[in-house]
Length: 335
Image (cartoon, rainbow, N blue to C red; front, side):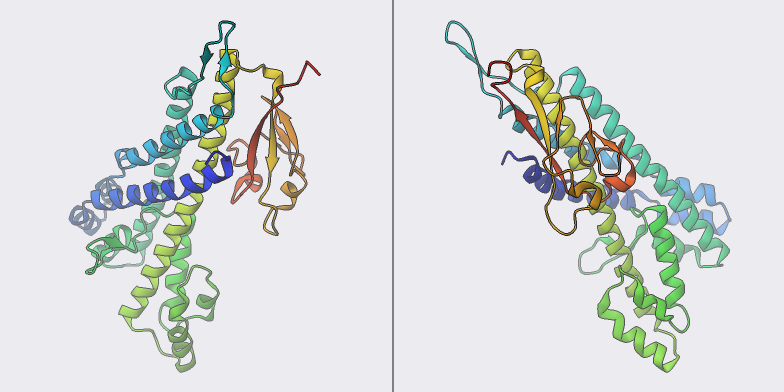
């Protein structure tokens, strides 16, 4: 497996699992009884502190990003033939993930990624706590909504808000309001709803009766679980694309510095998934070439270093499934 698109798919699933594991670690760290105690006193700041959003929970996630980066670098180097010296000795090139450029990128990128995730988590948790207090809800219910309730069958917490974005927490709150009292037909328009409950919602609407509290809670748990999966998919795809494409550039620079290839021999080609889901601005980019160090030009005019480039406009990055293929023109300059 040496094509970057195949590597993206492989590391996408690994990063998704690592992110979910980090979320469960955060939920397990939360001191539920202390959160409840502080909410009972109206101490939202204290309750937020008791949730304990510690970056240590993301250690394995950061390690997985590093592994993806190293895998991408090695796959790129494998495309470069061993350097043959005058005496016939073949000097192979190794991708060193510990070189200064690689280490610097990994440290800065993974640290920034986790910092941004946790910053959004703090905003989300604070908002959920305040909303729960203002609604006069039971503090314990508010706390359990955050960390999730233990599934008797699996022994794990599920259906919690921790791990979701601030926007997703608002979605959950809106869905809860649509299910309250007599359900609203708007609840049937929610894309993340579990459709197995649709018949119960329709029946409650037709009979103008509220849903049983236990059933309503199951619907909310399912909705939160699906929102978390969506969050994990988005994070994992983004991190896989960034780590693997950045490692391409670092690997090519290492090959150039070793003397195996010349800088002007290296180029990259933009590849799309070539299906109906490819965004219009990327459809015309399929096959576009860019030399090392130069960006691609999107159909919108945006400059993009590689698919998933975090420095590019969000409209060019979110849910992108394109990939960048390295090309080495060994005959350049001698034709």
